[in-house]
Amino acid sequence: MLVCFTDNEAIGCGAFKKYDKETVEVKRMFVQPAHRGKSVASMVLKEMETWAEELHHTNTILETGKKQPEAIALYVKNGYTITPNYGPYENIENSICMMKKI
Image (cartoon, rainbow, N blue to C red; front, side):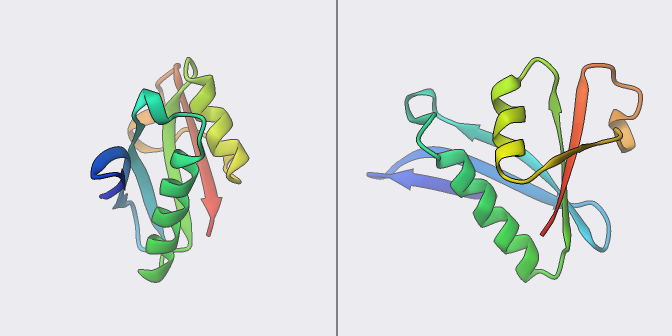
């Protein structure tokens, strides 16, 4: 898990877990409402990608909801593309799965 602080206040976080030998799954992305729109989520995401790369992973995947346009826009802005739903999300109508090569 990665936590972003400003003035000793946690303002954003994210985590990833190993999905397979080459891939990690991004989980638990969150930014405090007062700090949204300030690139905090992009910074957290980039740090997690760097960390995953240092652990010799080459791909990231994630799931978000169709009713979360801000999240979708964040991931697209950061180079993620929509892919077929994977694993537990395969038959979930409201899920959007995305991936990025790192």
